[in-house]
Amino acid sequence: MARKDVIQEFLDALHTASEEVAFASAASRLGDALGFRWFTYLSVGDGKPDVMSTYPAIWSDHYLSSGYDRVDPVVAASRRQTVPFCWGALDSARPADAAAIRLFDDAASFGIVSGLTVPFRGPKGRTALFTLSTDEVSPALLRRAEELKFYVQVCGLHLHNQLAGRVERFMPEHPKRNLTPRQRACLLAAAEGQSAKQAARSIDLTPRTVQHHHEEAKRRLGAQSLTHAVALALREGMIS
Figure 1: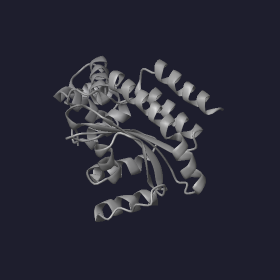
Figure 2: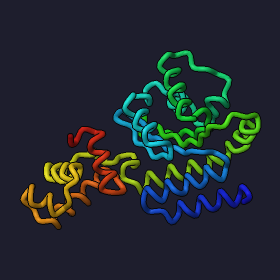
Figure 3: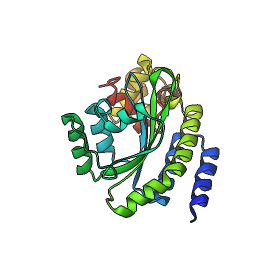
């Protein structure tokens, strides 16, 4: 498929997407078509970062739990500039900071060795990054990345704007992810493997009310499924 057709297919997919999973699917297809293995959209501010990615879940969890967003040279560079840039094996500069070196070494153990990142500035010091990355190291990749900077910047800008307008957790002023006591209780029951009917008996609710609390918790957390909501609530310490 010609490059212009790849970009058009991506923009068309964004136009019709309404849920996060559709945006992620479109970005994944774009990265594959342009010769990259993974994509990431990362939004960082004062609190915990929000991330949408095709990286292995174990790596994404390790990155966030290690606080790597605070020492990541790619995030730091994105705070300083507004133009696309290459990093890792595509950039001759090696980080001197011990924490950054550990981050790059950890990423390499998952095969993540190089990438192309487009930064975006948001309100109140928030920064977003759209990244295409790969396990490939070659002169051909460097040439391709340089040629693709403008195209990836255009695609990233469209993705950034659409997510900010349609996906609650990426909205500039999205509400805090607070859950009510009932929502936490219903998620905890789900985490323990209870069905809605079983949870209803243990919490003294109707099964329909349990399902309603599940749906509200998913909405507040920006989750795509009940399993996803449970994982997010566990990660952020809302249930244990």
